[in-house]
Length: 527
Image (tube, rainbow, N blue to C red):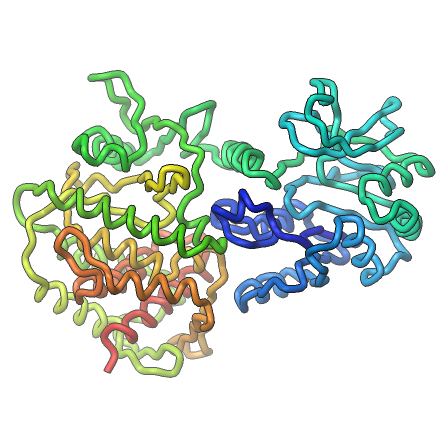
């Protein structure tokens, strides 16, 4: 059966202030777009169609992602109504068979054996304009638009985003006879067909700012099992690696008051920390990784970068004892991880190329990185988060403040809040310059030839915002450290090489991380 995902207009202005001017299917949810979650929930279908605004510029990575999933695109005038959008889409799809429709701002799990004609319904929980449903038993008797919130009650039922029609030609006629009003066309269709209203279909609404965050919360709470749970207002993190979580909790507990506005709030009984687990207050903010996948404006990104520099400046004011652990963080840890590489990656003494350019052997690369770190200016240790990347930053758009989660909290196996600020800068660079979040989302995927030594990883040009972010990164400094200094660049390359064993569940991503390290090394240290 064919499926139409309706995403032919743009999200509302309130949401655009955070995520930019994007269609709802491309709202970021975790490390993926909403449409990727939708495709996983829909499972195997005969055809999947996605309507998009006619003037929406889809970059090469997005186009490749949809093509790989077999999604067919229908371009729609974004000023047209939902009903007209659906009408035009059906004309392109064809009206000679049954059709499922999923709203582009909704994540649904269709029933395994649904009735031939059905739609999903849910109780009203927010005061927005909804399509209200009247039932006679399980059959839908009437559907009407409701624009006045004072008419909504606890018993009100609404359309929740999933529709299945056995007679697509009849739906086409209903749209035409209803002046292309979607809700009135559904009402007309239900008069002539036995349409079941199914409340058991799980539907998460991402279409309004408030429902976006509540749905995002519900999705996160459902997806995490053993290591992370979200319950009420708290995040509960636990792991078999008790030492790791104890170090994280100790960092959150121990940072000075001046840095606490930038960190997640630890919840515990004073003097009674729990071993191998901890709780923090749940903050209903997007991660910076989500904003990076979206098209947030430069105004938002200026505030994010300013918040990052502000935090780094504040952290650098607190000096720690002893010498900087930069060599251990960048080189020693990397050499340890090299022994855990998967067998499909080349041996350390094999000569490699990236995008046709020779980069020497892995041994050569590690030696160059070690030489660069050894030549780095000495610095006193300072407070270090240790994993200062986009996925570990939340951004409060209303207060223009970053909130940090999941710190490292340990160096050489010992709990500490101190490290080297240049390592945190490199972690920020691995998100901005290294495009880590695009790799995780599989927007960037490397290829390798039959020899296993020649890699290709092209970062598409023409992405003005991300290119601007890179320029701003390399022009910045914080805590007395320039973001473009050689030690930061070396640490960025090392990060991608050392994280490869941590992604053993995804060999394709491991290959891309390796190729990306070669790409960065060629860019930073190539002749």
